[in-house]
Image 1 (cartoon, chains in turn red, orange):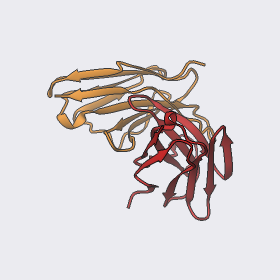
Image 2 (cartoon, rainbow over the protein chains, first blue to last red):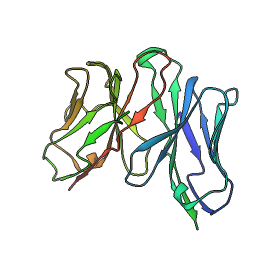
Image 3 (cartoon, rainbow over the protein chains, first blue to last red):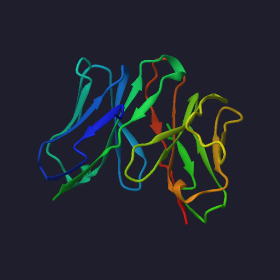
Image 4 (cartoon, one colour):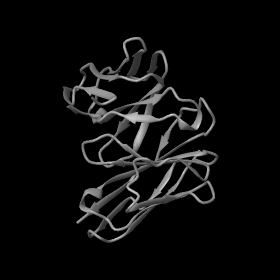
Length: 112
Length: 115
């Protein structure tokens, strides 16, 4: 079993829809990252969470430490949101040796 | 601030040839990572540097891959000789090295195609 599982694997939505992407993990973590990767592009960090909820524009990220689960929500989705969304968790080890483990990513396509 | 710089962006080589990728992290970032991302998969850590020292290279195929960060600033990743399965995007990322600094910045990546 992978340490970081993401669902659904692929997601297609219509412009304007509310989208939820999920991430579950099995290890103790100090932080969870949501990353966005456009086709052919680099990776952009959207959020870093250690508890609760964060909001940036149309994006909302939540984390439940007890349930080892995080969600990324996109409100009023737009075709430019089409990208791969990757969840990554940082293990609880301290300092430079803490390890970042990535999920496989979810490919989101938003149709106009 | 300038981001993480990587070059080349694209490289096509034949199997058994050699290739080198370069990364210049954000100024002052002590921790530097090289990741390999095969199409359809999440990034896989190849090597992690703290300044000019190696912290983790457990998943680096050392028979063909090497990496260095001699002065603790920029870094090179070399593959010699390349195999077909090395076709991937090679991502460099950096972050401040002190404990609690979880902000991670990625470069645009270097896409390698091995024919």
